Image (cartoon, rainbow, N blue to C red):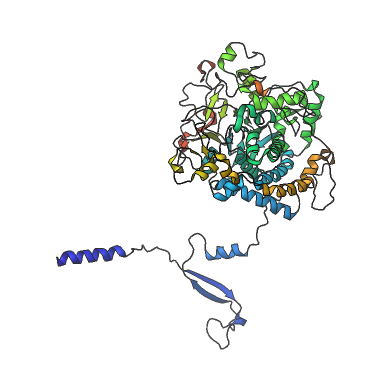
Length: 639
């Protein structure tokens, strides 16, 4: 008994003691510095005696040296002047006070994106403040995007994303796994291929976040235009119902203010680029390649392209894509020239009065076209001479076959085409002999089933990696009505989340039987005075005056674009003119699409998935030069 008692005491005593391993280097830091001997105490001898004429040294010892930086490093960092790098200095024009206002807006929107279910942010998303923040943010985007070419030229590494369609959850997945430290601290650029709105219930949140990131990182984030970034599509409330962009604007902010937010968003969409080129090798677009046009028949398009070449659009990157003669004049038509010749403000559906038929055709082909299926090519739908034909999507949209792809890649010396526009359950699909990649970055709202994945592609020099969201990845913010995650919430809190699209309802049950109980969920009428004040200030803002073509304020803070001719332009939509593509006669992701269904084993590995708590497996990377082209006989229809 004594022995067991003694053993128990020793065990309890030893368990309380912490065993520390002795590090070979001491944790204390000794600082040696030179001092002025005249400041030493009187009285000879000692370390401070300056009579010897030698430099006097003083040592001091500080314990607990920091792990990540030495004391001397910390002193150097403290001595550095504060950084004057302001991310908004190059994108926001006006006074310092105006930049601080925009900075506060971007901070609110980023906080909303990072914490959407907090009580303050849920109130913010349905407030007049959110609407005015979006309007002010969009005014800054107008000037920023008008300075970009219609075709952006990027260097890898680039993350390429397809359709988002208001899917807040999938966008958060990419934020948590692709730019986990933030876009500014993540190596590479970010390219979004369009279709940010409609179908999903969080279009306003997606638009606000992407516009904010573009404003903060204009040379790192690039937003292309999709077919849903046109008024005829995102204003088609009869077709999309509550999932249309215009319906969400009106439901969130009321008819008048909601319409202003919708129209202001479309003015930004009108200025989005149509395409991008990565490493002079990969052509990126929302829909597909445009048909060639005859420049001799369109002098306006020719002069527009010439003016684009005169601008400082990194023409060292563009020069290799443009063919000129000894006099510097355009000699050969290229599709990149056609895209650069599209006006910097284009309505497309419907067009503006200043848009020519040729420019409208090029823009429509970029946002509407699809790869042709093998049935379309074999049945004669695709013209064997041009490689183009009528798309299964209908409405005047076109499709491009093997010949069109081959001619386009050969003309520009490209290797691949990356596009979006078609839903795919695997997130990424290939077609046309593995030369055309389709990226789809939303897993919901497209009838692809519960196992559908959202994907993106990382292009890094001669390597590509597919990143997919696994169906097993747990949702963080968007939940079903019957989810156990909602058990701790009250009925009022659940209804508030339903209104914001954070809770999905599977049936037609009305959760708003007592409307009076939730009046506070609607935009507060007391804030209308704030909106009126904003509307008055909007008319006097620098950006709105530039857009409207008036300038009645001589304030020093009112900085113009430096282009008086552009300031006098009034952009008028021509609703009477017929568009190249009629959205009311089109279908989304038609059956019989072009995606190859054959086994791609050894061609491209799509098994790389990121799930909760797991790292991305680099084994799925293949060298782009090692991708063999599949023969036409191997291409089968997936749908």
